[in-house]
Image (cartoon, rainbow over all chains, first blue to last red; front, side):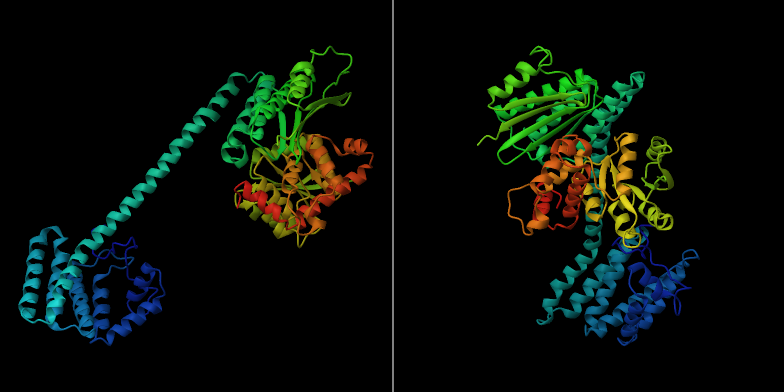
Length: 366
Length: 211
């Protein structure tokens, strides 16, 4: 239907007469619906045009003949041709109403009819002849008249615009649609790749390890973490920072030991050697809690304060007597205390039957 | 004590039936809804003690449910329940009037406890929410309204302990306070969060590219 002359090249829906919704023959109502405006506006336009030598009446009659109704099929060829002729006459009357002289209007009409015909394959040659005729008449009648000669180039330009305008418009619309489609398909491809690499892999692993609930839970947690990072990218977690390093450490421990690590953090700052030591000590504390405490979850809270950074690693496990253990048995010795001391910070540990908490503090680098 | 009447609002059917199973007989689930459109008339009709409210619903944020129901049913209390990590969504629900926020990984017993506390009008802060709130009230800039825009040292201390994974009872013991006092500190923080127009909430949101 894209070649239908009733279809405007603006992406508007087909214009149909709206017999039920209309006042007379439903022409105004149909046009209004297609354009998305109020029918009264269209009726008013017809009425105003009627003052231009009856152009509105001719246009209305033409549209009534040429437009299809919603229910019936296309109007007959004869009705359509007659309707088009009436519309053309209406156009001519309207142009006369604007004050254009006959010597301009009739050639323009011939050109217009010719242009329409060139777009309909069997009448293409006839159309070209009409265009030539129109231009010829125009040149003959206006030739030699110095005042009018200004009109000639603009008339030719308008004719060109009429021919090329719709074509250029359609080209732009198509290119736009194509670009949108391409972007969408690229997005879909990226999404598919992401899901394939992450969710589908995890689901496969879950099926294989379905007999080990801890492992399944750890896989699910890791997947959740990854998806979340993708869905809600945290502005602060980009690049090498305390927050992103702690995230990574918590994920590693969780994966290695199969115990969920619940990490809460506020504030962030860039990584340097000392902050990195703090992260490594925190990681060690998390690993200890996950491995030895028997708790089913490790809570980590990291806070960047005005003057220092504090990290708390807490479990609700069995607890132990810090004095009774050998310095290395829980990794408290060198990997936590020693590391923190070398970085200029402190590590302390409190343990009871309710669980264990390691507290790490580091003065902020100035 | 009579069982609490609870309405469950979550668009995931599987999750709802999971919560139902986990809660067992501890509370009475009187209704379930999967969207804002379903939830609003249901809550108005049932007038439950507590609504467990998902932060994300298919037709919008959970805060819309609170905004539409709360004026007519001031007795209904809301507890946000979500997997969402997006701080702005959580803060939205809290500012709309939810009494707290817990993550979906919470255990059944803890959830029952959280429902009881919500029904009693207490604030329920998970470690994650405590982290969000500490972030929102970061010190450093002058406050426009010192009463609402800053946390007291004690409130900060309580929030830090919640973020570290301590329960109210443990916090009370640690700070030599009664549990009731700890609860009132947390409620005060909740009130500040809901009433403060602190520009730092804005700054904090801007840092996260939320606005």
